[in-house]
Length: 163
Image (tube, rainbow, N blue to C red):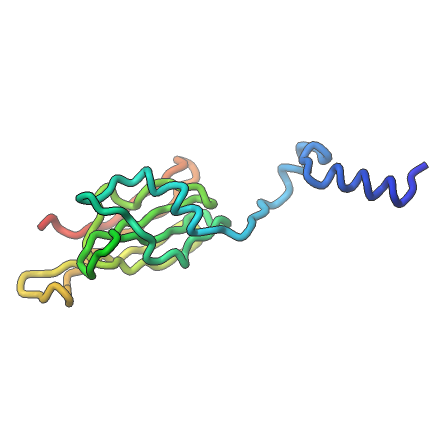
């Protein structure tokens, strides 16, 4: 006999298991995203980024980390740094760490904007000749796009010149 109590027990057993649905139903289900923890994402992956001249990295902007986005990011800089200290952009695909946007960090806080769900635009700032270090006027622009077919991020544009 299928009583409400037995039905409830069966539902609780099936709830955490994908096996209770057919493979077709599981494939048709949308991705379920949980609230992301940007600090945990940083902590879990920071060891993959080498220290910079003996300095550890710290998060300076985690507001764009989104475990439900094709491409999201966090901006990091060195502990005890200044405005011109190096910065990296940590990239994530559905919350999974991909690596930094560029192999080398660049000085000054980059301006990063979302273009769409799988692409960001970065403006790097750098001092031109005669600029005060606190007011750089040089800019270069780069784009970073998640390419689903290649399963990687594709960069376009430029980074600051080597000084």
